[in-house]
Length: 329
Image 1 (tube, rainbow, N blue to C red):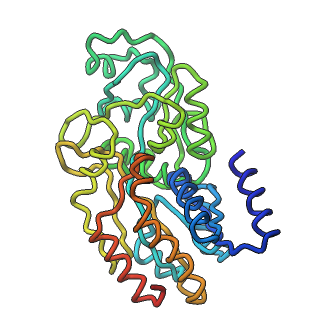
Image 2 (image 1 turned 30 degrees about the vertical axis):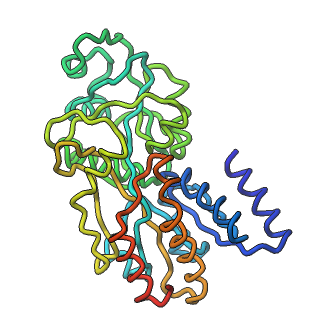
């Protein structure tokens, strides 16, 4: 439905001769980018046409130079960015949450439980590893149905990166990436698809970006962090996970926020990134940068309402200097 609406708006914009900037990629920030785009168009008349196709698709399209900008939750390493002649910068910080369909509030999941569930070794909700951290809750003897992404996904990259750090067995048997060989589960496309499955299938569990869990009124688990604390996903716990980030422009802002130290640090946090082609005409990239500078100046309140964490002002200034060095700002 969202893609159909986007196509209708694009057709109208073309008919009206409006200026259009085309981007594609991560579903993780789609709720925010679509709101920013709406407000930016209202203020400037410039339309941002952002297609939520997954991080893998976003990286592929900007590498092939078929869009104005790409978007990915899996940051490119500096050597990758250099290889494809791409610039990279973050926009906001968010979290991947573990959502489930059970009539149980505030379920606590230990690292061992999360690993066991997604490895397919813990098969029922009343398994002792889940029950021991949830005293007083009567867990049903219901089979667990794992829902995971079927497409190349930055959300998968963040989630499997966390699992690879937290769970040696996962690292050895599966590893991490935008797409992996899942030991178990039903595949769904996009954060939208995973959220929809979880909502419909009783006893299911999966991982989605926080805004999608809230939008679909899904329950979210408290997850054990690196310090052994059970942490609820929130703007505050995402901020805690990002508090030690360096954000080095020399490394194209490459930064991974999973499994960070900190009493309140949420263990599955991550930033989302924009990719620009350095060989595009400067005027083309200036238009894109102008939109994201507007978002940095005027979009924080919207980001917070949608449960994303705005970048600190000093990081935004680093990004603006990075743009200046490339001649785009």
